[in-house]
Image 1 (tube, rainbow, N blue to C red):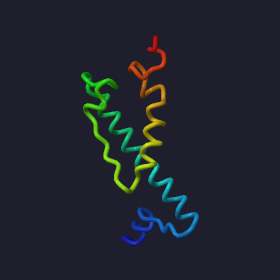
Image 2: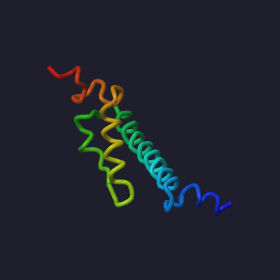
Image 3: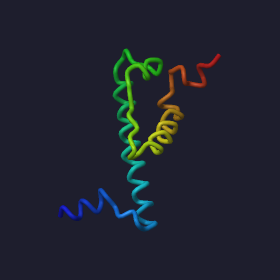
Image 4: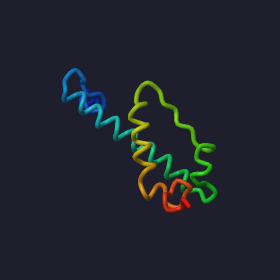
Length: 93
């Protein structure tokens, strides 16, 4: 059973299929983590996008840095994330 779990968590990336699976897996984990950070920040009434950088630090190590940046951009560009903040294009004026 442990070997099966290892094959899922750490796919062999020597093949094209393995590299593709690894990329999908990394994107999934990074996106879930970032959305959780955003969700927990926004859950506190005193928090907004204006204090996000003061309250949150995200460390990019050598494992998933490029994927995290793309995922952040995608998350921050959605209407639900930006709605009612200074990043909301409707609030520009």
